[in-house]
Length: 343
Image 1 (cartoon, rainbow, N blue to C red):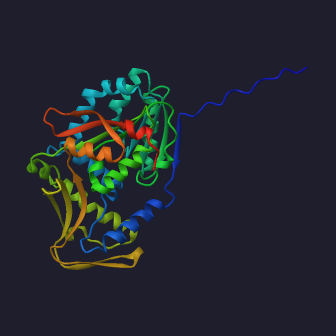
Image 2: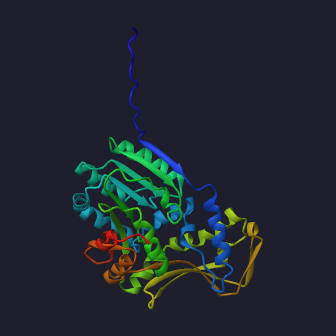
Image 3: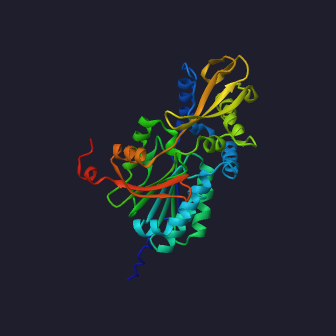
């Protein structure tokens, strides 16, 4: 009788990349432009800054002497990564808007050193970044699995795979400040659906401070931020067959004391009309007319706690740098929310 050889076990591959854009990102851009450029006060959401050129310019911004958030956030991570690893015992790190995962490596190092790290789940709209990062990280961390999600975290959070153990969801860089208060709480509520009772949200938030420090960070002496701001017009030209002339606009950064946020705007240098071909949309600008391209809200601990509680989350840890420029916060599902039915 011939011996039967049992099949070899099927091992999960180290890298899996799922794409969920399928044209939705392009439709989102068109929808945002049609909505934002037909309002009495024109505006565009900041997520459209980040094409390849925009990402390159933002990397340069992060190295500027005026731009403190990236350095401050990284210093907080370096100071507290081991405590975060011990407190969370996370087997998985999910990162929203992962980019190159430059800062996240500090936390991956700590989780790997603690012996708990199993999987990294980057969520980003730029497929090349996710693929390159997955290849690098699986080489750096033996046994690490990477499940990349190519998508927009405002639209595709339901595509994040089920957790393999206790997880940290990281939302770094102060990105939560790009949303006005109502939208901010909606986004936090949607993120909370990724969390179970043993999971945590790790979030970066810029803090309220001297307006001169804030304005310098968004209007640097070298003009890199100005070029970054105008780059969104090049995105519209390429993606929507528009005919914006970036040099027709000045970069403006101002602090709104009432709302405690920075606004970036583009101010028309002359009266003119541009045309967005894919939308068959003429857009008229008066001389001096401004178009808002970003808000960046600044936080106090009270404001942040209020936003978290409105989203069913509770603050667990508050970490800042020595100069109180920036904060990293760890939160989880609020104890009363965990026992309440989801309505």
